[in-house]
Amino acid sequence: MGTPVAALPREAYTPWLTRVLAWVVDFIPIFIIEGIAWGILVGTQDTVCITQSSEYDLGGFCVSDFSTLGQLAVTLAAIVIIAYVVWNFGYRQGTTGSSIGKSILKFKVVSEKTWQPIGFGLSIVRQLAHIIDGAICYIGYLFPLWDAKRQTIADKIMTTVCIPLLPEL
Image (cartoon, rainbow, N blue to C red):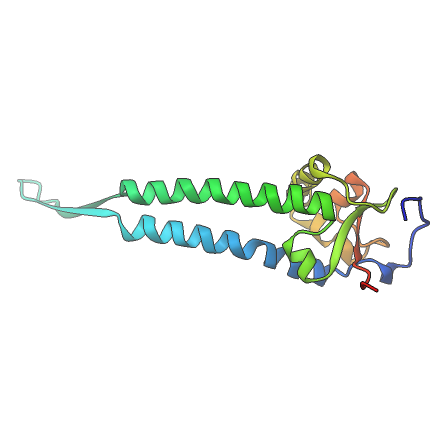
């Protein structure tokens, strides 16, 4: 299957909604880790209230200060999230064609020239190319709704397509 293949009918490529659901699955761990870290940050903050009594009668006011534990939690969460993103979208998707979400929804990203996964480096570049999809009011993410190969702008730049996984025989 390493030889170039002519374009398939539109229905042969992964539908837009399936791709969106895979994105949601891929980002659930990120949302959970980030939520826990911010919960620790907010839950451990120190609040000091001061009542001011002077001729100007400014009343009382409170000042919040994030704890060291909370700041450490957010920093560690950021490191874990970066590691997860590099592993999931770089290594895993680059070598197998499927991130966790794509595996669950049974499709993969491949080069439209070789029909093989694009490798670690190009998979990271593809993720960065999605910045362009969002830069124009997120229209690039909607391209699969009308494009013949259901590609985003990032897919067009990287010459990749999303195709369903073939069932194991």
